[in-house]
Image (cartoon, rainbow, N blue to C red):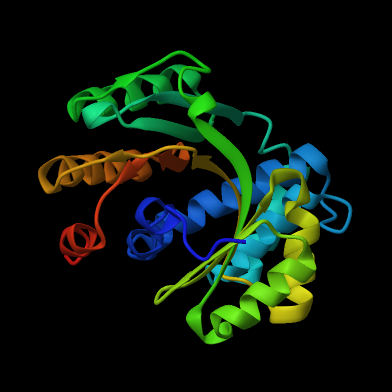
Length: 249
C-alpha cells in the first residue's frame, strides 16, 4: 500500500459541503430514499442503503430525518428520481464526472451544460471521460482515529488497497465491489468512519495554475449548489499551497 496519492488535491470538498448543511442534508436524504426504493428499506439486506445511512450519520444528520427518508421510499416518493451520470470537461480540459438524482432529466442536463459552459467547459457524451477514471471505494477517518501505522494495519486486515494519511485525516481506498465488506471491517476495528462512498478516482491528473484552479473551483461550487447534483469528481491537481489559498475564504 502507498502512503500518498492524488486524493488530497482532488477530494477536498468536505469543508465546503459543511458550510451548506441544509442542502447537504437534502441530498443525503434523497440518496437514502432512492437506495431504499431500489433495494428495500432494510439496511441489513440493502448494502447501498446501509452506506447511505452511514454517510448521513457521519454528517450528523438526525435519525428522524433518515427514518423519514426511508418512509418516503415506501410511499412511492422515490419513483420520480432518475440516476444520471454526466461527463464532460472543465477549464483547461480537466475531465469531470457529475452524478445526479433528478425528476426532470431535461432540466438537469440544461443546468449542468450551462454551468460547464459558463466556466469554459463543455458537456460530453456518455463514456467520453469515464475511461480516465477508476471506480473505487473510499472510507474516510478523522486524524484522531489513530496514527498512520494503526490505520494502515487495520486497512490491510480489512482487505483495502491503499491508505492516504495527512493532517486532515485518513483515506482508505478499496475495490468498488469490496466497499461494503471493507467498510464493515474497518467500522468494527476503528469505529464509525466520517464517510463511506463509491467514487470516481482519476487515473491521471491535469495540473492547474492558481488562476485556472480558482475558476475550476467556482465551477465545482456551482455544480454542487444545483439541487439535482449529488457528486462531482474531476482530474484537476494543484499544489497544496495554492489549494490552501483558494479554499481559505
